[in-house]
Amino acid sequence: MAKLSLTSTLRMPSGYEIPVLGYGVYQTPANVAAEVVGHALEVGYRHVDSAVAYRNEAPSAEGIKNSGIPREQIFFTTKIPPKDMNYENAKKHVDNSLEATGFDYVDLYLLHSPYGGKTNRIGAWKALVEGVEAGKIRSIGVSNYGVHHLDELEEYIKSTGEKEGKGKGGILSVNQVELHPWLARKDIVDWCNKRGVILEAYSPIVRATKAEDPLLLPLAKKHNKTTSQILLRWSLQMVSSFFQSTKAQTHTCVGLCTTAEIGNEVTHRGERTTLRLRAFH
Image (tube, rainbow, N blue to C red):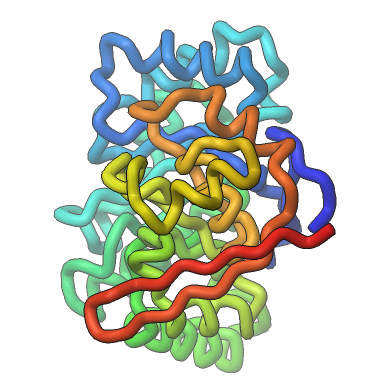
């Protein structure tokens, strides 16, 4: 694996670049979002992950603007809320997000979850595709999609492309799911990797519930890192991209970038998870 930094990027199927590391503002109160986003950008993050349902798009954008960093150097993600998963609502949310943030475009707009039934899911996807065509969105994707829903969307994209022309069904660039050694989701990982879809992991440090886990402590000691840094490095080697919530300390990712590369293997035996990582020298 190449040397990483907080500004390392990957190319999405859309052709745009996405930072490998991101900063999530889930459960961040609106009255502090601008401040914490500003701090994240100050230490080096260049990807901010928000959502309509988080109710902090506007203050997150304020933190971005106040940073003094050019807009084109920052990657901003938001999402259509689960309860509004249909064509009309999604169209409105795209425009509302631009108005709330004051941005000319959203870097990545996701369907937050596969709610609402097939017709409404596809309708909401159509709205995102139209947002791309109108220049309001650069890249689109989904969140919390399992293989069944990914297959459904892929079928729509392919059939629409065959009927209306290549790309008319949209380009799936990202699937954002919870992913860590205790929820490895090999079927989703394999599906995305096979198609070149960026797999973006949330809750990579397992909501801070594994800080003293006996599987991680020896590895942390061996590499002179925290258990959180070990988990984040595992994510980097298992998936394409991940983001850390504001509940975690920003220095966790800063230190991660100097962590030695580690191979990994996750084995599930019944309800027991065995995590084995080995250093490559």
